[in-house]
Image (cartoon, rainbow, N blue to C red; front, side, top):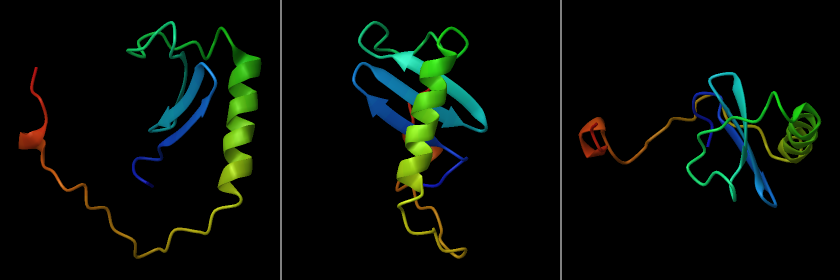
Length: 81
């Protein structure tokens, strides 16, 4: 999915995520709710996972310019706080 510049990669206990240009790194075994961004504490791991994502992305066909996003739900379907 190409929406808001999102990226995600899972490697073992770790998850790399990018949303709106911000990189996140989570240990999803220790932090299942993904609340502690460990990107600054684990810069080498973050760099390796970003490189792994880039290598995978380079193998994917390009997304056509006229591609659209259809989420299949609206904001009223989302839980409200």
